[in-house]
Image 1 (cartoon, rainbow, N blue to C red):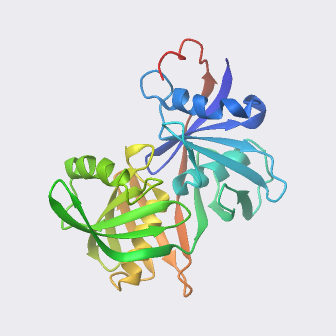
Image 2: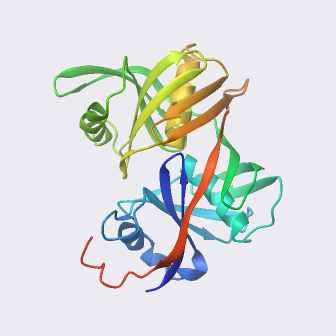
Length: 275
């Protein structure tokens, strides 16, 4: 096995990007994602993306979590993906790209392109809030949260302060609760003012990550619906900052960077025993 790869990150959420022609057997995708994303035996990443041809858009993005499960969409990932397909000349450089995901076709605008790093704006759709305020119990603690989907499931917890140990303790338990049969992403948010919030996220299938694009969009949608923030919000995650814009119809736009880390060849021989 010798697979050309590119490693990128979007505010610390890191990904391995591949071309379908370099991974011709799609039945191998999930196994490969587990191998290549391992921090010690692989390259190490929160997720893996494969670029392949689309019949309905400029390019199709297949996304896999670090545990090998397939994800419907990834907010930070799609920004990196748009940068990658332009850099690799898989699509022409133009103002707006249409990228097919497992959910739908997303409109992506590369507002500033450079080979090493770009700024990308993505229309993330209209989140569907299933329950703006519900109560759960974790380790005897009553916790209030909002439950919603932005194509992928999320919950949002308002916190007076953000604490890594709390995220790592509560996140995996909420992710796998029976009331979320497909699992959920867990976002912890502190509101500083109406234009600035901080977020930490426990991602379904990836664990504690430095940032989650769909999670940040979910947080802002909930806070806006509650009347706690303006229509344009700066959000600080552990890995960096995104700007979120909410239009008059509650559609959400995400604006943020994509950054190259490395290119190379993945030689997977010998990793098969390290699942």
